[in-house]
Image (cartoon, rainbow, N blue to C red; front, side, top):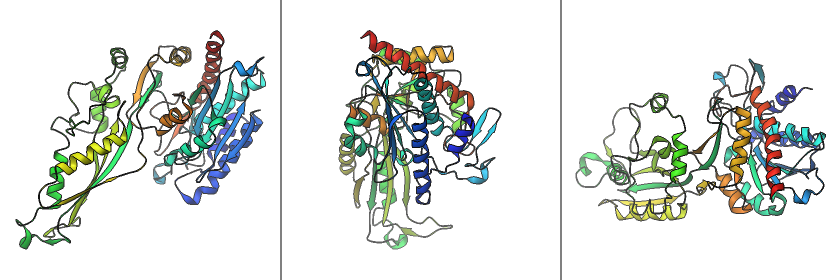
Length: 451
C-alpha cells in the first residue's frame, strides 16, 4: 500500500471527538495509529486511557553511540477531527477521501491527520536508515477539537514519561504557501457572563414603564462603560501587566505582508476598528481584547410584546497577552462591573472555567535560528515570525508542566478549509513536512553536539 492510500485509510475513520456516537471511531483511530507507529519501528507504543478519549504514546531512542547525550524531542499532534456539517456543501463525502489535482479532500486532512501521519513516516525513514539523531517521543491526543480537557491531567500523571527538551507540534500551518512562518506566541483567554436582574418577572411596560429600570438598558450601560469609542478597554488596571513588544519584534512584524484592505473585504465590514497607536498585526497578536460574544433579554419573537423583561445577560471573552493573568483579569472585571451597577437592578458576574494563560517564546530562544535555517532550506526564502490572535491552551500547559516550550512545525497553508466543508491538504505539503522534520531533527541534534 502506498503512503497516499494508507493516508486515505486513516482519513476514512470518522474520529469526531465532539459527538458521543463516534466514540468507537475515535478509539479505532487510536488503534490505527498504535499499529502504524509500531510498524514504523517506534518503541513502547501504547494507548493511554483518559476520562474521555485516549492518547497514543511512543518513543524511540537516538541511534547514536550514546543516546543519553542526544536531545529529546516530543512530537505533539491530534487524531480527532471536527464534525463535518454542513454535509451538503462538501463536493465529496467527508469520510470518503478523494485525491484531486494534488489535493487530498477529507475531514481531518489538514487538521491534523495530515500533520501526524507525515511525522510517523519521517520517523520510519530515519529508523530504517539507523540514523535517528534525537530521542523521539510522540503524544497524539484524541480531544484537541473539544479543548483538550484531559491533557493537563495526563501530563501531570505521566510527567516523567513525557519529559523532553523540546515539544514540536505538527498541528498548525504556515502564514502562506509562499512565505514560511514561525509562530512565537498566542493570546490567552478569560471568559465571564453578566446577568442583570430587575423585577421578579416580566412586567407590563405601560404600568411599570418610567417606574423601574429596564435590565436591557442597564446592561447596555454596563457594556458601554467597558470600552471607549476607539476600542480602548476602560476597566481599571486591565493594561497594568501588559508586556509591550520589543523593538526587534516590532521590526519582525513589519516584515509580515498584511493587506489591510484585503482583510477588510474578507471580513465584510465597512471599516477596520481597533485600539489606536498600534498596527493591525500588533492589535491582532500583542494587544488584549474585550468582546461581547452573545447578548439576550426580553421578547425575541416576531412582532412586539410590551414588557419590561425581568433579566438580561451577556457573555464576554477577553484575549490576554503576556504577562496578564486570567485570575487577575476576572477580579478586575468583577470589581469594575460591581462598581458600575445602575440604579434599580441587581448584577451578577459568573466566571467560566477553562481560562488560558498567554504564551510567548523568548526572542532569543536557541531553537528559533535552527527552525529559521530549516524553513529557509525548505521554502527557499527567509521565514517571518508571527503570533496567533487565538488561544492555544496546550502550549501553556506544556510550559507549565514540562517546563518545555512548544514550537509549531506544520506545512499546510491558510486556505485548506480547516473546520469547514471540503477540507484538504496538498500532497506536496505532506512531503515537505516529512522532509522538514528529518532536517530539523538533524540540525537540532547538531546544536546539542556543539554544546
